[in-house]
Amino acid sequence: MLAQRVSLAVLRAAPREAESLLFGVAGFLSSPDLAAYRSDTRAYVRELWDTWWRRHDEMGRLILPLALWKFSGARPLNHPQRRLCALSLLAADWRGFVRSFVGYDFRKTRQFLLGLTHPFWDFHYTLRAAPAASAMALIGESRVRDIIANVLLPLAEAEGHDGWSDYAKLSAPLSNRRVETAATRLFAQDDRRKRFTKSIAFQQGLLQVYEDFCLQDNSDCTQCPFPEQMQTWK
Image (tube, rainbow, N blue to C red):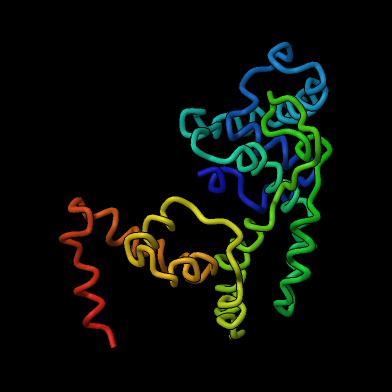
């Protein structure tokens, strides 16, 4: 929904305003009361607000209700505000990002994405959080691999590049509850279980099984149609 209201073209047309536009339309700059923020954060918020206010009459009707955002259950590093900062940096150097995957040498893409930095967000989880003791990546290794697997490799395939071999080689540094649930139900204590959670390709297969079968089954696997369906495959 945010992408529909603040397009990439809008962000690229005003790269110095991209961060403020995203935070403003996202609803994170609804209050100009700087007293609500930590003293070491106020200068940054004031800069965001001053830029946003100049565009408020034009874009204020696009502001999203804060209730649409989901803050619970996500890792602090993945807080929406940190993601918006990363998006603004990508938009500001979109040509550099595109150049990083020309020829589909994703080592350059990885280097580009891991190299995104911000003086405030490198050390904060949210606008109201205390600074962290050490710097944190805006886009970490796991997210880089997700971007390559879900965005760039499909693009490579669409342009006639053989992306499957690269896709099959992508390891998955992190897992999640849905992947683990599907793997446990399929493999139990079988040794193959670990192998099927270490690859992005296998993880995405497990996620599809979870969505198509685990979420639809209330019988604790006893009436799940997946085993029967597998027997029809050749």
